[in-house]
Length: 125
Image (cartoon, rainbow, N blue to C red):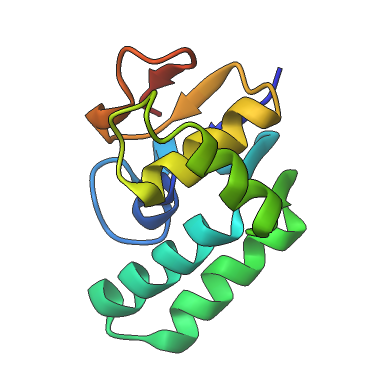
């Protein structure tokens, strides 16, 4: 089964920190993420590295990996809003979680503890 990768894992994979290699390993395997995560990661990497070109190339490199990148479209947004009463998540996290649910992900790879105790188990890289 597939694993959904949250933006914070992508950010750590392309910035200097103690989790960098673990996060890169996750991105070298099959995974699912969405366009929203990529936008969030690009923004954060640009700020952390102070280099938009580096951030852009980092995100573009994920298109060559074994990842499936889900579009942020009205259907995904609808699915997130459909679940808004059920889950105590902000809309950004809910969009990501809805994407993981729709695609039957077995794991949600994230450092964000807001995803604890949900239907899909959160794991750290």
